[in-house]
Image (cartoon, rainbow, N blue to C red; front, side, top):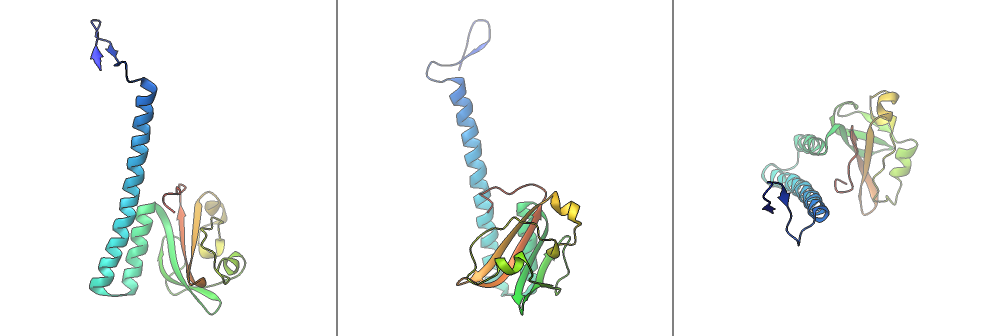
Length: 170
């Protein structure tokens, strides 16, 4: 950029204002995506390190849920295991049932965890998982991730956020 005699900025002939602005927006968007991916990678790296150093424990599962909720901005979350037609809460954060509670798998929960399990993020609010009022739940964003091994259901991760997650988060 050069400055004219009246001290107003002028652009070089090869650069135009729209492309500069577009480039800055694209760069900012790209950097934001890279930072998000790095944060995801660090979370799983820390999980692997803790598994290596301390082995599996209920505390590890609670730590991971807390870290995941913090990273994604979810005020409420749960990790559950399917057992005998119900989901047993293994870790929880916010307005959900306490660890050890069993939630029957009726309705959409039964459909989501029916074999073969599809690798799908469900955004339907399921009131039976949360202790939030129906009105409060309707104004939030719910994400439910079925967990499966070889398409056989093993549980569910649920998150409730006040802002929507982007595709990069999922």
